[in-house]
Amino acid sequence: MLIRRPDDLPSSEITPEAIANDRRRFIGAAGALALGAAAAPAWLKAATPNEVRAALARQDDKVTSFEDATTYNNYYEFGTGKDEPVDQAKDFRPKPWTIEIAGMVKKPRTMGFDDLFRGLPVQDKVYRHRCVEAWSMVIPWQGTPLRDVINRCEPLPSAKFVEFTTLYDPKRMPGQARPILNWPYKEGLRMDEAMHPLALLATGMYGKSLPNQNGAPVKLVVPWKYGFKGIKAIVKIRFTDTMPRTTWAEANSNEYGFYANVNPAVDHPRWSQAKERRIGSILKIPTLPFNGYTDQVASLYAGMDLRKNY
Amino acid sequence: MATAESVVRGTLRPTRWILALAPLVWLVVRAFQGDLGANPIERIEDESGQWTLRFLALSLAITPLIRLTQWGWLIRERRFFGLAAFGYASTHLLVYLGLDQGFDLHDIGEDILKHLWITVGMAAFLLLLPLAITSTKGWIRRLGGARWRALHRLAYVAAFLGCIHFLWSVKKDLTEPIIYSSVFAILMAMRAIRQPRTTR
Image (cartoon, rainbow over all chains, first blue to last red; front, side):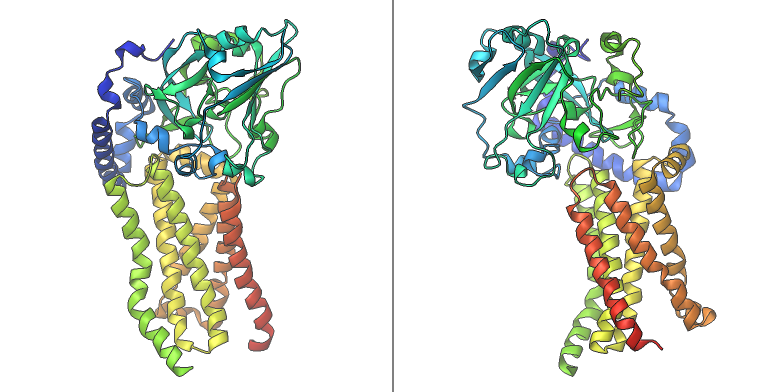
C-alpha cells in the first residue's frame, strides 16, 4: 500500500515556494525548541509522548522537500560527505547506459536502458525512506516495478537471488578512486523479495528524471529495507542460487546484514534504531517495523529470526 | 625574536575572542538562515564536536610552543583556548541532549550505557568539567602548582577520548578522525621529547 496515492499528491508540495516555507517554519521551530527545551525539559517531555509525536509526524507523512532529497545523499561513489554527491555528480552523464543481464537467465545479454524498460509500466510511488543512520524522508518516485523488469530478464526457476551492481568507473565516479568500500557497490535480494510489488526500479523522482546524486539513471527502491539496499546507477542484474555478497555487509558484517529490514527492535551496534529523525523536523519519531509496510511484506519473513537475519 | 614576539602578542590578544566565537556565531547565523543542510542537528553536532577538538589541540599546542619560543605570556592563551574547547564541548553536549535526544532521559541513559562511543564522549566531557572549574587563579592557588598541573593532565586523556569518540562515530571514511588523532599524537610526542630536559 502506498502511503498516499499519487493522484492525491498536491503539486504545491513540491514547489520551491513550499520548500522555502517549510524551511522557515523549521528554523522558527528550531529556535523555539532550543529556547523552550533548555527552559522546560519536563514540559517538553510531557507534552510530546511518543504516540503523539508519531501521530503528528505520520498524520500526513509529508513529502520531503526536493532540495533536501537531492542535497543530502549517501553515495560514496561521489564523496563520503552527504553534501558532496550533489556537486561531484553534476557532470555525470547517465546516458547512454546499458545494463547487463547475467547469471541464471534464459539468455544472458546486455540491453540498452531504453530497450530494457520499453513498454513496461511507469508508476508513481510515494514511499517512506528510512536510512540505517536513523533519519528518514518521504519521496515520490517514478519507476517500474522490479518484477516487471525481472520477468523481462527471464530468470531460470533455479535462480534464488538477484544481485545488482553499480557502475565501476573511477573517472566518472571520483569517489571510487579511494578504497573506502570494495567497489563496485553490490546489493541483492531474495527472489521473492524482488518479485514483491512494492520493490521498484526508480528512474525518476518528484516528476523529473532521476538526479545524478540520487542514482541516475536507475536505482533500486525497497521501502521496507534500510536505504543502503537501494543500490544506485545499476549496470548489471545477475541471477544466482547463492546469497550474493553485499557491499555494506562485506564492509562491516556486525553492523549491516543482507536482509536489512527496517526493524526498531534490532539496534545498530552503535545507535538505536527505535526512532528516526524525519528530515525537515526536529524531534525523533518512533520507527515502524518494516518501515510501516508490515501488512504487505511481513509474510516474506514468516518463521525467520529477524534478530539473526538483520 | 623580540619583534616577532611583540607582533604575535599584539595580534593574538585582541583577536582571540573573535577566533573563539566566530565559529559559533557562523553556526547560529546559518542555522537561522536555514543554511545547515537537510539535517541541521547532525551538522551542528559535527561542527561543534570538531571545534572542540580544534581548540583542545590549540590549548595543548601552547606548552610545546612556549618551550620552543620561551614566550612565557603564552600560558594565559592556554587557559583561554582550553575554555574555548570546553565551550564548544558544552554546546556539542547540549545539542545532543536537547535537539537530538529531546531531553528524553530514558533514551539518553540507554544511549550512554549501550553505545561505547557515546560513553567515551560523555567521559571526555566529564574530564573537561573539573578543568574548566579549576582554571581560575584562585583554584591554582588553592590546589597548589604541582597538584593543579597533575589534575590538568586530564586534558590529555580528554583529547584521547575525544578522538576515539570521533573515530567510532564515523561509518566508513576515517580520514578526519585520523587527522585529528595525528595532530594530538604529535603534540604528545613533543611533550615526551622535551620533558626530560625541562622538568627535574
